[in-house]
Image (cartoon, rainbow, N blue to C red):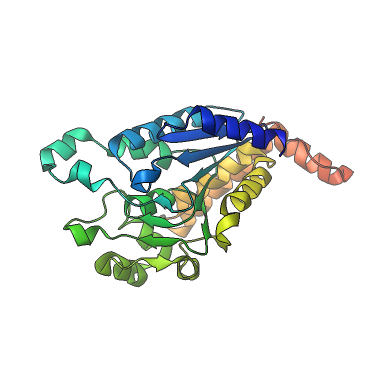
Length: 272
């Protein structure tokens, strides 16, 4: 066991009763666990609030360049906590403003990888779709089953899912409530990569470490251009890309990267 693994285990022990567990490593990667195993990591208000606070803090933490979000071997997150919302009224939901808990994840400026084992259903599927990359175990299942309890998705399930897989696959998932297996999700375009169940977090951490070695300003601008340009006409999207491309020539990381390429050495990117 290396030093990072030992530190990670200590973090888990110290926060065993927390709704989330955050581990930060000195390679620029943070690993954030959902920790409601008895409820299959269902997203109750307290968990959503804790997640939002983590992402607010991580956004401003210059030591973190990439985040991996995961659950456990049984569930990434099995949806919203139905018991917590069964008796809610429209006005109560409006006043509650749960969308504010999603905003820090939606607006998170750094690369975010979802490492998914088991169930990613309802709000759990919507949470995974907030990530930039989704790595799934072979046994993972993705779905939007809200229609079964008389409602519909409320955190992007009708919008992000349609953008990811297209109208016809999205409508099938939304209207039948039938989950899709990881392999099918990958073929549909909902998942980036499928690996063995016991390799999900390891693969995500390796990918995150690779991303964290890249220039962080360039990574931010890539994410910004992809997300902001996705629903624009091509010419407007190209304008966003071109301006971000030009702006990066005013960074020290661009100078370092190109000089290292010329000198045939590994670059050292500082985020400057």
